Amino acid sequence: MPSVLASHACEHRDLTRFVGKKIAVIGAGQSALESAALLNELGAEVEVLARAPFIRWLWRQKWFHTFKPVSQLLYAPPDVGQAGLSHIVARPNVFRRMPRTWQNRLGKRAIRPAGAGWLNPRCAPVHIKNSTAVISAAARGNQVELRLSDASERRVDHVILATGYRVDISRYPFLAGRVLESIRRIDGYPQLDSGFQSFRSRPAFPGRAGCLELRSAHAIWWLERNLLRLQLHGKS
Image (tube, rainbow, N blue to C red):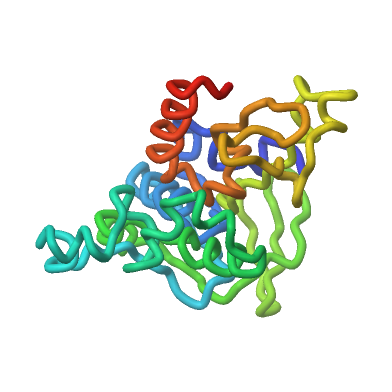
């Protein structure tokens, strides 16, 4: 599919090129919903297509989040994930020692697609079609024809993909040859030690590439403190 007809949400800093256009946004998370809201406010005709049966909104529970004794007991400082689970995923050294099946289940639950509560009213005018997958997409002149799982079709001027990201360090151009071969990997992620370094070759992966252990950038606050502690104790 040519880039003039389909693109990823991360590619856009300015959406004014889509004013007056018919746009399909695929996804159910913050990127999809915020892109749809901005497009609608610019005057585009936009529809969100989501496989999820409903859109999750991150509403802050008044007493849970404002009454400190309760909020500190239920939520870690990054405030990512449900009550209780928030503390587990915010402590990678605890999380990483769990069985991989537990990690996968809890990780998906903590960072599943959702939109910020403040975005909800801005998305009210946007048509959101849930429980819908795109079966195929084909260029038809200067438009895209989408076939959906409910047997319906769409003709749009552009498709914006807001379907997340997949880490695969083998595709990093600066990692090649022996360095790449020396790094243990799990589903494209590097397998890391407690200092977030690869077991054999020792390069550190403190960012997105380390997120199989971090589960999201929300645990960077923990990682910064941990790396500082390791440096102060002379471990590099």
